[in-house]
Length: 636
Picture (cartoon, one colour):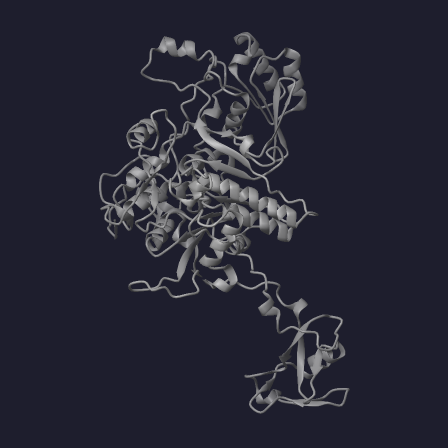
């Protein structure tokens, strides 16, 4: 890895996937419109207006100037050699290839592992997060208010994800032991020791595509917080400068996470970093932190004032003019003048006004102060960059919090809810979607539910966690947890039940829908196969023995709808409701009257499998009916 500056253009691939369509089959006659559902998971954002170019593509700006060569690179005109000012490392172009490669996977619902599946607005996805982030692009681009991640710190003892596409993904994973011979996923990560020659490069290769996809998911006023330590903080900051734009850097918050000094060899590390970037600094705002009891301690109601608690504030100041020094006598007979070396803060008229408002306090020693009421004070404080363990917790306390819910020794060094509640409070509103794609012990989900209980919010979470196997001799395995994702889900279940029990009168969403990454339900077009056989196979584009609800969720994602969309089945039609709009999905044959009934309900979009039509004549007729009604119709 190296950081350098040259006067030559960069050979850097685009920050968004450019091969938009997934390899999914269609069975459409020539009069059928192009099937836009094939562009499901990789959305083209390059048609935006020039005014938003910096916001959407900050990486094409170098030192505050538009870099035309970088723009050419994004459009496919790749320069031969030499990059200008920026962060470079071994394998960077391969990391962009991992970003650009479309996914042919989908998400399958697992109601049996979920809590309150039909009603909850929370999501837990068990999978490699790179694939999931690609799948979520169509449905959630620009809709995530806050992202928090706690990725591997690259200490030399942890694992990083390995994204290699030189072989087919499945063959590669079998060859490396990431899958068994039956194709069962075992792991998609590699240990990254410090004696590895590409120690930093491997970590950056993992982070780059994930952060690019995260950038797209953020809303315009959204923000990302990333926990890290000194091993990769410097590299992370530069990488985020490239992806989010240096002008969108918010802060590097320092969390004092230990309250004791350990007997380390050289230095006792007592902090971690939380690097924060926003999507657009022009409209981004951090919320104020709530005032603490310590900050309010000086406010008391010493005289039973009906305006409530107050604290005395001097009515004199350090600076002023000698011409403004005066003596005033109040109607109660008390005289006042500023002490020697001080000056009146207010005019005589203002002091008399405060007197009649009963906003002055006359103490026993003849002094006079203004009453500053707590109700008049700004109900919040600006967030500083130094976070003490007294305010947001420490590692020892976090372990105890987790152990009370799941048990001791099950998970090492989980983050605490006090820390996550502060992070969430800084930018989200009460209806935000919070994403954590390195979910780990699922503290983020716990904090979202707890915060909703405290302020009656309706925040939703999306957690993503790889089913990383637990060690066979670990306490987690002894407790029955085969992988980290199982720990994550159980933590949410138990934390949710506890929050419900503590708040019986509140309607708090403590449920979550579980999804897992699976292959597409549609057959893939094999270019090298016999064309006649291919065409015969695509009379029915679906694979054998697929579940209808799995198809519905795959189409839902291709349509750009949220995973929390309400789904109901009525008279052969799956009706989806999302963001106050209805959508229709038809998987099997319907009569003309049943198709007409769909038209009457005027859905925002109707998707029909080709096999639902008796022949091309019926299909053409139905298409014309929907077109005449001005309705969006698509077949696949």
